[in-house]
Image (cartoon, rainbow, N blue to C red; front, top):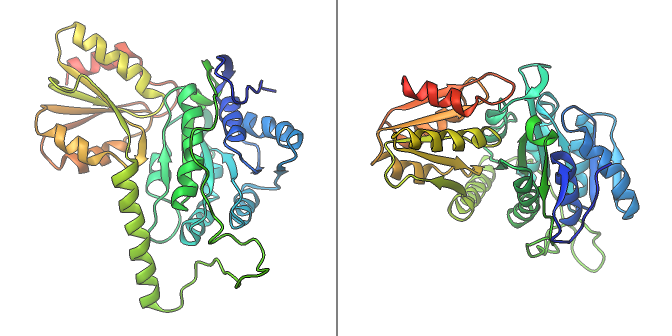
Length: 355
């Protein structure tokens, strides 16, 4: 089981999945409900021991459906609750995630992507970009989606996932992949860096000395549902205005900007440096929040560059959001690999040289 280093600035070498689990503990996770699936099973393994040690709730559920609905129940009481899963199992959770957005519950889901579609395989993949950002449940809704590129960032964004979920009362996804989940890197955990959110005005904690409360997603009247959807999308707009996050390097004079997210961006950043060494003015752009997506900044950059190239380990998903952001201002190309280890920096450079 992974080593816990709660609340210290000492660097420890740890696996990505253990780092995420430890960060969730430091963030104050009260309840973990999960079902094992490769490549994220170490999260549940870690929680099975640590949550009991801390007298918090841990349940090994009978299925992914059970796990996510247990999270909804716990979150309705204002608890910090989470689950973790992967790809085909997250697909089973889509109905519950739609309910969670309608109920405005602070669900935290760690999704460690593997190959698909269907059962797929256990190799790393970024094939669930659409699943996370576009949603597989019914109706108009958005999940907050955070995409780390290192084990340290997996820790930092786990903290942020709990904070944003409770700040906005909105399900939040930490979208990692099998590569990040299994790799080992030195990390610092530190203290939970965000303020605690007061949920006393909505949580179901018993109606003693106050009126009863109801959390529900059903609105029998069309006008009432329209009113609720307008409120929901006003919240999403506020999230876009306040929480959009990205990393960009060497975009000031770039003729071509490489766009990538998650673990793939590590090789892309190296490729950008190699292209610069060859005299090609390349820049680097990495969305950290996949929703909210940094469309506004990409639109600004599109007015002064010749081309964007997205690099993804899928058949081309984020490239569509880049195209929407650019809105025809310049070409958008795709370099991709369906599943497995990301394209190497040299592969990316070779592909760009012939574009």
